[in-house]
Image (cartoon, rainbow, N blue to C red):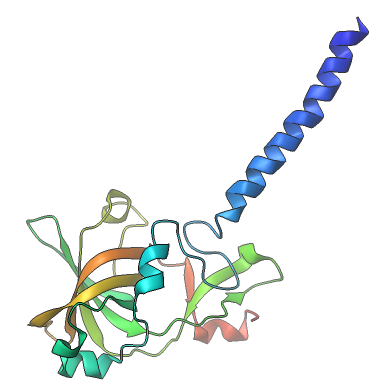
Length: 192
């Protein structure tokens, strides 16, 4: 009779240990879908794009001399101003360029209180042609005006949006709905 009790008392700590290890491994993948961490954490599918993209391309140079950026994978951040859905399934997403801050703002000492942080100043209009994932196409957290998007794409030569900004053909994107990121203007109420 002691054996079943002894067995079950050993099983519970073992199950608890297994659950803790599984939780820790899941946590190692980073800061979740919206990057709740002090510094930027790539999604697994995003890493290869991030490692080979050019984040230093200057907006005015890309706009005036797009041929210099032929076949270069650019990485730009933008706050969405308009989404036009096309009949071919792709969407034309117009954004205002923003600069990402390497050190994210946090409400307290925990990573879970940190939010991806971008500069609050606009850097110019650009458009990205994006094949939206189903979770970004509909619902409350869909990609819409005031969403944040990080685009990895190439310049579409000779094409400009209504504001004269460049158009990128997207190879990969990452989306943050409203409320899942902050701008540098939040620094007064959050810490670095």
